[in-house]
Image 1 (cartoon, rainbow, N blue to C red):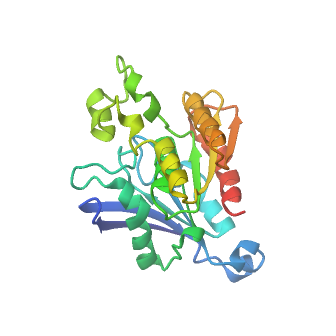
Image 2 (cartoon, rainbow, N blue to C red):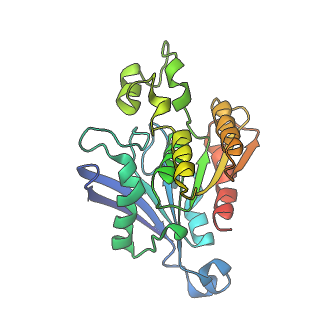
Length: 262
């Protein structure tokens, strides 16, 4: 399993950005022969980090290198800064376009990967979980979406209480989502994207959600699952004891990958 760190120029971001990739391209033949997952080309999984994280988070916090080799996965881990992986009007702030299209196109050129939608999935934790769900619904690039403890905060922005908030201030939320009173009505909201796809008759990617029952985002994840169910959208939603930490994300990363490969 090769670990690669790349700095490259992104058109969407108007500048240099970084990418970590784990590539199962050096597995000894005798190991590959005993593994059913090497009877097919490598699948592609994009993993997005959370708020205040960086491109190395999944490499240092999870078993993704081991799982990449075990399941024959090419895993791409970009740096999304604190963008929530959505496009903004400002030049160099097109993060949805970056992870929704440009990142895959670059990986195909650089690593020779099959980036057809049926071969690609996108996942993430917290802010990255939101980004994965949002990107998977906004673009037609991924057939599977994985959200772990997803930061599904858009519906609550109109009533958000920022007094004593130690994470971010109002200027940050407005820079990311625009008018907080109207954010839930825009395509920043995954629910709006689902409704648009249903109205247009477009297929919806497979969706896998997991959240800890003690996580501060539990209610928001449950509400998305209930919304999907009410609108007839097939998905899996898993709840188990846990909070917003790597212990929970590592517990559900491998089951999510196994679901992805079904």
